[in-house]
Image 1 (spheres, rainbow, N blue to C red):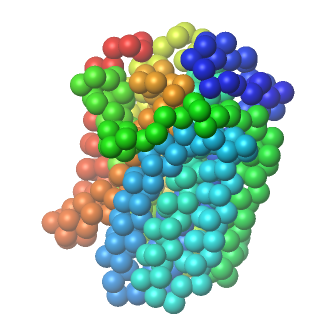
Image 2: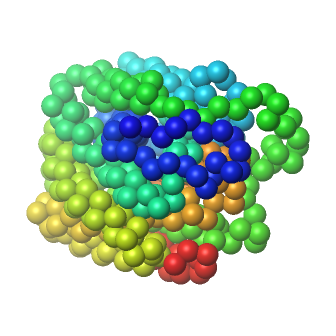
Image 3: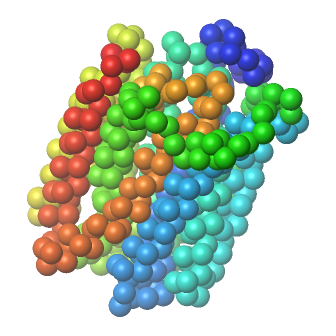
Length: 421
């Protein structure tokens, strides 16, 4: 059962019908597929591709590729969100961006897979970030578009499972086709395209008519990248909390391959399997805690306490990883981060939809600005991590200790939110 197609009126905000599990399942699969295609290169394949092309400068080259790619992500997400909010296509507001984004993203990953230089990898990753963030801007806006307030915690809990499921599925696929560089990029990308197309074809999308869209002025263009935190402080604090938590995760996700090789002493050939095992352990914890946390949040009508606890637990997991002397201890740290991740992200997504400045008119644009908090750490972490490693003589214990401290701050910065309990 799908929610009925919604008119673009303020009245529709309050009388959205409850969504069924058929809709939620397709929605979650599409979101998982997008992360599957986008995060698998971040976790494994780009690092290995860069190491293959430039083994003597792998760390610095990886930082350049991921850092510049993240810049395109943080520019693209709010921009495509605003365009989605204003789209008057007969195919709907969100559908064109879902379909176009994943197809163009898959083509960009094909460019990376067949690249013969780091420069081509860099170009391909920038294009991939633009394309997949166009899809993400449209898909995340479906939550406030279609899901009533009393179900948002539950649905957000399910959505909180999607990113880690994309990670674990991606790392499994990569280690199972590790002999082919082309397949390590294109198998996850192809699955992502199929899942998003399935959802796009069944989505009863919102529609706008040209008369409902005012011309863009200069103030509107500037507003694509800005929500005034003094006017909307709860949105600002929620954005900052997400930025800090994701920054902690970015250190872990980006530098896992080098950590396992340089600190724990494993060979490069083992890395896809070791990362898959770590992500699998983490994902089991995330799945359990996301679904439980989201439903419990809806049941008791509280959001902040879950976000605070999630940040503290995630920080603890990073500190365990920082001190890990061996791979089993690393897995323990990954399981703890999974518990924290599940609790935090399941409820944080519901919380931000509750504090959006204008949930009906600007949902995709404002969520695009919020998603900058997901993309910006991908630029910050590769820029800061080499400095930390240089100052500490390449000590990954210090790198992940700093990451844990940053994640802990995510709990503190959610406390000033007042409009949501």
